[in-house]
Amino acid sequence: METTLGGIPRVSKLSRNIKNTLVGIGYYELLTYSFVSPKTADRLIFPDDDIRRDTVVLENALGEEYSEMRTTLLGNMLDVVSRNQNRNIEDFNIFEIGNTFSPIRDEDNIPTESLKLAMASYGETDFYFLKESVERVLDELGIREYRFERESKNGMFHPGRCANIYINDEIFGTFGEIHPSVMDNFEIKWRTYAGEFDFRLIDKYASEKREYHELPKYPASQRDLAVIVCLLYTSDAADDS
Image (cartoon, rainbow, N blue to C red; front, side, top):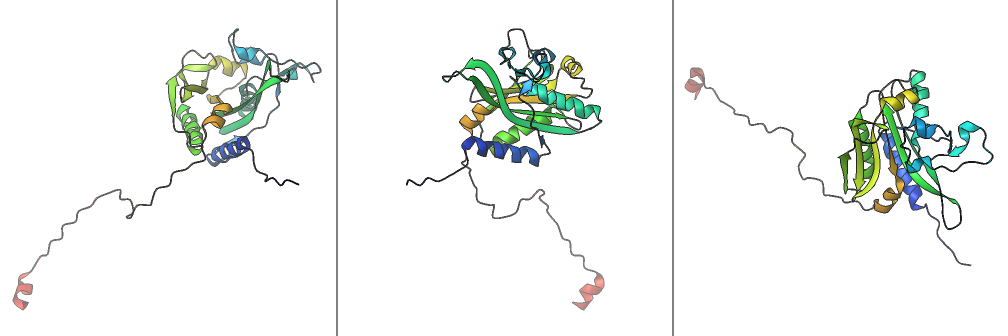
């Protein structure tokens, strides 16, 4: 009998690393349904030709609100944001790692699944907090070659507070402040920041290699002080000598 060693799949390791990182900086994990309403794309103001409008429609759905498979995690995430704001939860940072679905079928004639990471935040936060959160995740995964570019044509986000992020010139995702029209569609009353990212690129570029550097011989110094000591002699001291 051949003996094989068990282990944790790479995607599971990466997911665990991301979860630990985000929980460590104040995020809560979500687990939402993969089923959404046909109205989700309209509420998110996706363009008519957006590929995310092409959905897998369920034959025996639980109801119209759950009749399609999601093509983005952000619809369910903004619903959660809305419910928490309506309950006067003033600060909220959340994330989800989950699959989205496309009617394009694979070699087994099964709809395609794509793993995504989504994040949202409101309250004592801003665009730069979300940006720093993304950077923290990538740095923890050993991904260094990434850059941000301003994005002003994505209708889901505020045109002046939105950015795309690229890893080695491949688009990783888009994040920013949710557009006021989308906020109205989801009955969100406070500024909210969100983004969605392609887990495929995390799996492609994440590295388990870490560089360790020798600790400095002397402790760090924030200030450099120079002290001048003056000795004063009195006449009495001079006589005694």
